[in-house]
Image 1: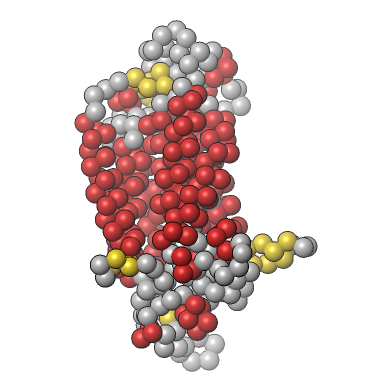
Image 2: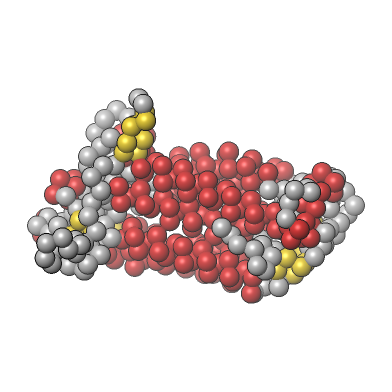
Length: 354
């Protein structure tokens, strides 16, 4: 598999470890990847929500609720759709550190909890959904790196130079077809997803800057765009999965969500213009507006003062009454930072991430 002494390997080697110790703690790279991804998602969403005129601290409030919900929803989806991959120990259904979080289940439950919290605070959900959409993709991309350390989420055998080496014990535990057990390198579908997620995140940010995207529009494209990639990914994957009518179960989910996401986007764009709220009703401008924070960047302060924050519109404070300075016209869909601003969660067997 190499050319000459000292030549670089002609494949992506498997990592020798999947965790490390800090004192008595066993830190799994899979869990660490999700922690870093979630942290980045919070930071990105704070910036985008502040640019809309909302209070960035709201993002922390939402995260305290949606992150646990996402982990629970993701694990429930994984346990239901791939029961054969649950570790055979009493705590197996909860063992997220060994791999096994279904993204669709995590996003669904997290979105429901987040929408409930925003509605309770009197804040329109659609603009926040647009703000968080690219951040979710960044979190997913970083989280997928954990699949590399778990030696999972791989595709069909390949001789390409970027093929992923999978040890025999992981091939055997991964439930791949018997005819593929003799191969040692496979398509690194986790890597393809990392690249796609980051590219799609960049596209959503660019689109928000250059087009009039209404509330829910960017989130709908996130759902449709990510799911469209999963159609391609599911056609490559050979790791264990439940099948229906000869196809992987997740293939059907991907097709359905691709259609739903695209139709959702069109419907969101066709909705009539209306005002929406980014600050809780009754919040004084001095307490809730971004321009009341002297330590914030000038560009961010301008957004709360009614300046253009994106080509598609402006913030109009007080549109819903003097007691609601956070009201904004829906046409703005101004969940994107202003021009020039950068946007910056112990087993030895392989477990696929759905």
